Image 1 (cartoon, one colour):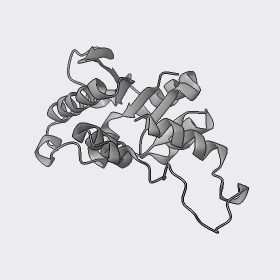
Image 2: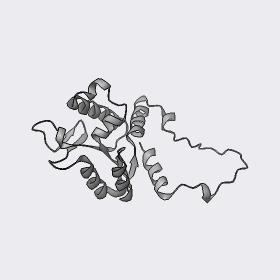
Image 3: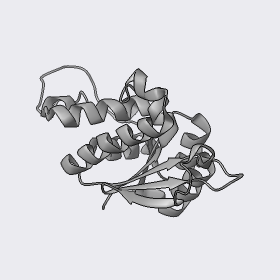
Image 4: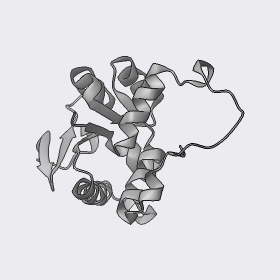
Length: 173
């Protein structure tokens, strides 16, 4: 099943270390840098990526929806926030979506709709690890082989269904 990554653009710019501090002073430059990084990521991991920005800081005469370097870029309408657009997309995509946002309200709504969620910091780390192309960085800490132990394992240690679903989606990053 293809994965659709829906990103809260300004949240990712401000919460992660993907953008240099000097680029943060200019919204247009920060957006371009983010889209460049995401297009490089898309070349490595072929997921559909949509970045949603608040329309308040949109460049003049820009379209509300555009495709730049293979990344779908959306700006919210006047009187609407990017969070509203992300929630609407998460409700439409359901299990196919992975929402990238550190905003708890957006993350809880997306999870309630069946979408997987990841914080902006964690997604930034995934991009760094994909760029470095080190497969050990994609390991989520689980060992694949059998380790002899006397420790009991059972349902008590099992993650909840939502956590298992999130883990499966974030492994694809």
